[in-house]
Length: 259
Ligand SMILES: [Fe+2]
Image (cartoon, rainbow, N blue to C red; front, side, top):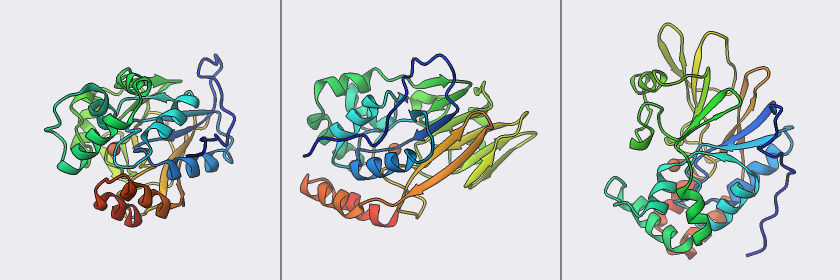
């Protein structure tokens, strides 16, 4: 395996002045080809800081390489359910058999330093006036899914910032709360003062919205502009790695269709 080279120069998270443009990645799921393609795209977007809404590992075949990249980027990262199960030795009863299979494989693959890093991730992080969480803000440790307005509304009760980015479903949708809560797809959005937004950034490494391209968000904190970006990557190589690792064939097949 050749060394992983970052295509970008990254800013330090200790910077005191707010950085205005952020790349927000989620559900990377150990897909190195997708992550590299996303970072190459982000390097064209004048991004100053990289953030991650969790699930760096699981499902694909390059967990060590992906964790290393995220750490080298100084990403502010929250813990995803796969990051949790891989690093905590919890019972895997909540996971479907395929996911549990990959968690066991990933536990054996990851080096101790990367496992320790994943174990230390927090469930919720505030960043320059907005929030990151993997699942929901009302019960982030329960790993509940937000598919509908009612689930988003429960999370909004605990959202103290205007904008919160999340992942977990691998489907890029947004929830907007004004007098009620509205659900919609999005490509570009300008967040309006006086409203709250709970925004799923989609998945870098295993999209499930029918579009196999990697997904991530560029957020301009100054204008509160959100852009969902989709990036083609080398799906074939990612599939070959899954099969070579002896991981379930279904995980390779789904990458081609984004489901
Ligand atoms: Fe995930």
